[in-house]
Image (tube, rainbow, N blue to C red; front, side):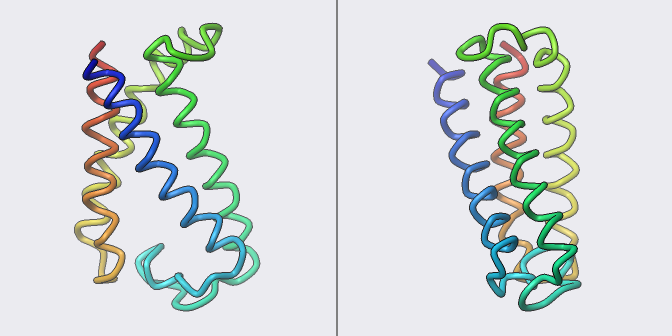
Amino acid sequence: MIVTVSLFVFSALTSIVILFQLGLAAGMPWGAASMGGKYPGKYPLNMRVVAGINALVLAGMIVIAWARAGRLFPELESIASVGIWVLVVFFGIATLMNTITPSKIERIWAPVAFGQMVTSLIVAMT
C-alpha cells in the first residue's frame, strides 16, 4: 500500500516538474524559477532545448520508479533496481541545491524535490 501511494505521489510531483520544464521549453517566462535564476524571463533557444530534454529524462525517472516497484515494464526491473537508487541520490542533491539557490523563487522546488526523494526512497526499499 505505501509503495503504491509513493509511486503515485512520486509520479504526480515529477509530472508537475515535467509540465514546468515543458513550459520553459515552450517559451514561458519562468526562467527565474530555474537554473539559479540565471535566465530570468524566457529561456534562450539552447536552454529551451535543454528543458525539453529534462522533461524526457524526468519521464524516464517515472518509468524507473514504476519498473522498480514491479508495476510496469518488468523487463526493466534489473536496471530499475539500480536506477531507483540513482534517483534517491539525485533528488537528495536536488533538494539541497534548491534550498541553497540564490533565486528565492526557485526555492519553491525544494519541497517538491524532497518529496521526490522520500517517495523514491520508499520505492527503492521495497
